[in-house]
Length: 334
Image (cartoon, rainbow, N blue to C red; front, side, top):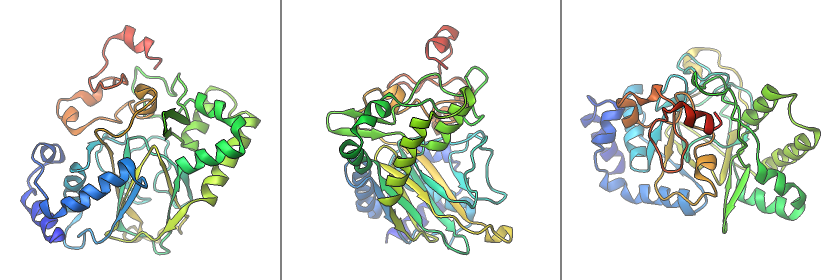
């Protein structure tokens, strides 16, 4: 019943664009229990969910996009992910890979455990690589607890944070790397949030200096090792959809062999979305928006429809409006 409902909703929405679908999201009553379970897992449960048997085999690529998009619209508000300002990002080594600055998304090599930039990330497997690399997840909250017990001397440095690179996807009024540090861990009461992507942090350290200090490099090496040691590895096949909370879950995958031809390339669709009532942040502008709102990243479909994705994006807590005043731009440390 759930699959039929999704397919019917997709067929009825064939003429709608993704922004139009946001304003006309079809109801999915049969899927509501699944959607509620995913939302609960992301907000207050394990922090991730894995969904099987998404009906991709009956549709072409554009229709799969719409079905995936309208499903995720019931969970949160999708945002753009790259220099092409696309709401659905193709994770592939093939021809469908979008313009993504200096990011290596989709390359066959191993993907270390990291967070993406919005509240949540979702990946739909359309076609898996021939050697079927397993996906990996790790609890950043568990990592925090281990570090608190084994390396408490590192916590002040981790709460201080690191600057983040913008991978050559920044706008003309923005700096190539943030001029502010984003805490790797932050805490409000018992709520701990993690923002860790070593690649983005490494590139920023190299851009503004000579890279990480030896102490920082050794600390991050241990974080990578602990994350990998405690990761959960699982099979990810066509029709599977994974969801992860980017404040409590690190995600990655094992390497795979390069594809011999275009029709053998690994092909995932990715949606980044924000959720209402997600959690509390020590500084929403830094923790939630400090790593995503630059260039054409972090815009909603409705903001795109208004032509705002060419403007400078605000990072003030609760604000989704463009930031236009030059004095304010300087104050924001762009």
